[in-house]
Image (cartoon, rainbow, N blue to C red; front, side, top):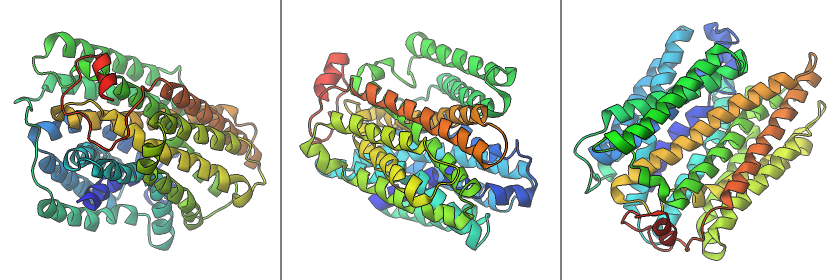
Length: 469
């Protein structure tokens, strides 16, 4: 059952990055413009991050297995449409629908993990889920390079179809239907529309910034509009909604708030670094798609090892040290990468700092995810899962946009040296985001070792949430 849930999550996370290495081949085959090519990545990120909260709440209300299967089915159909795409528009639409399917599927996986596994089994199960959620970006880069060079770029989408169908069959065989005992009878539709539109507008404005600039109307209009919609959502939830999508008391539990803010900054720092590593390998080291993909394997292994070490470490070390210590390693790795030269080599300039970034992320992922579900009532488990997924993905979108803008502004002259100047600035900016993750993690309250499941009853106040943690 755990393997099934992790496989579903892996499909979703891998597809965030699997196209990175394949972008040159996609551009050549379908005739994308340089500006339009970014939407192969951004269209997925836009719908995925925008609908995660809605997907998480739907799992609570309508049944976790039902929502898991529905998201999988939509993801598989969109993958099929993308695999046979004959023009840029068709591929971008297919990637958007993929993101929607992923947003429905992903929160259900974490909810099923936290509600199915109890006692000592829970931290072990969450370590496996965290390894997949954190390492998926590295796995995507590896898989994208291998499939693009050995077969064809379309196989980065074809591969989802047999895996997805197998997972759907496994869901009906292994999973039992469950929903929150105290689930509300109705979904807060208007609140769902507000938060989804607000998040999508914010992400859209952010991903526009590298090509349009932060001061352009194409960037500012969606950013301001998204902020207005999110403020309206908060007011609606607090004063209007009889059955709110997100009870505002949710964020009175300090571990939940600190975990989500830490994940936001870590997402800003780490997810974008895979993008710039891929560019450096292909543009500076002159790696092909296969070589660039295989170069990410050590990082993927390091992140998996870091995540799986979480339960054992949390029994011996205060989880707060892991939540802060993991990002410290990320800072060290990104600062090291900010010194990459124009005549660098993989072993000398990339190997060790890449391991620091990925291992540090893996170490932090499990205790952050555990804290994000601490003190949450069973009927809000899906929502909590949607929130922590949203913060990671929104952080990744913001980080990529900011780092791409910084890289473009710092690029001096033409040729390899100019590109490297931009990559150095991007990695250093990522290190700044990782420092923010460290500082935020310092506010995490002392937590007990996770030998028992989190309390089933919702916290009544910030103090109650802290005591529960």
